[in-house]
Image: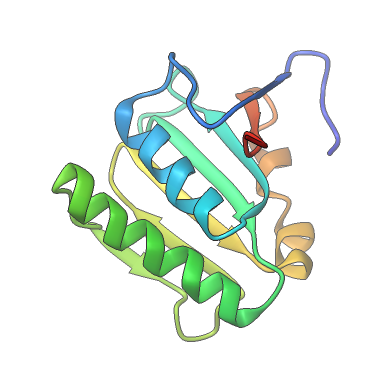
Amino acid sequence: MNQTPSSKTRTTKKKEPGFAPLVSLINEALLEKKAEKLRVLDVRKLTTLTDYFIVCQGGSDTQIRALANNVTEKIKEKAGEHVWRKEGLESRKWVVLDYVDVVVHIFNEETRNFYALENMWNDAEVTEIKDDPA
């Protein structure tokens, strides 16, 4: 990932205490289905569109669908929240799950590299999320 000197990256385990509870629940749901290159972009100081972007990728169409479905099911079950808008489930190249304060982007590798969403928000604080190998 290309980073500017102003961007920060830190690695964390499943739960990051500074995140909103919804962010942590979404991260858990994505890790359950083995999301790849999972990152949280804190854009609260940069835009009024949302507070966080969660960006990850899946290795296949099937995995991308499983990631999206697991997020929507787990968030509904654990937080009682319904996805406000979802796009891209048909093509499964770039799925967007909009929870208003948190927007989840699930890509295939080619589409993620092409759009380089993280580079567009390179002033955001970036946290790389890795599964806790317990």
